[in-house]
Image 1: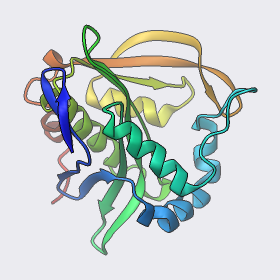
Image 2 (image 1 turned 180 degrees about the horizontal axis):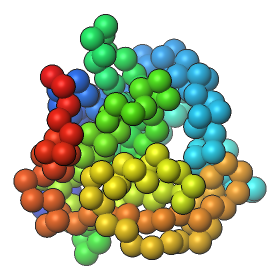
Image 3 (image 1 turned 90 degrees about the vertical axis):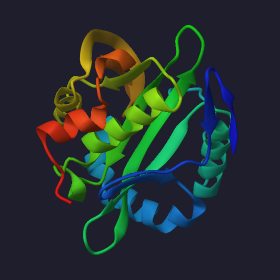
Image 4 (image 1 turned 135 degrees about the horizontal axis):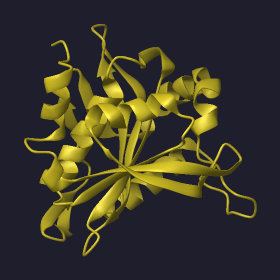
Length: 212
């Protein structure tokens, strides 16, 4: 489905593929694989997971409910909720998620990126490539001006992602997001569309080619 969004046409569902990586809509068929990956990575992901502050309304109570909420917001043009899928030579596997959220048109014309990856796939350059692919899509297809990533200062692996891709550090936001049970400080990193030249995927591959 496509609809006019600012100066561009926002379409959902949409999938992006580059070499071994595919970003595609998370769907009900992913329930089993998603649950298995999440369970296997409980301790790996726990310190960086968004949580609800006391008094908040409960979120979706089932995986199906989560998919309905994500799909509804995506069709309204407010987010791009993708499954991160990787072909490791033995088939394509679901290895994480990447979500472009808080998409805003008008004078802001920007969005935020969040992600997580299966620890067993970490260190292969999957998330930097996924962030680059999503950012290029938002700049070229949606006409966005700014992409932002918020990272806890303690999250060394995510800090390496923005460093590799050349995101600009903009400073600290104290107690910015509720993560792992409390309000946590976050460092803010951003890129504007005029800072990426031929694109972020091209920038990433010029520094670390992905074997094809």
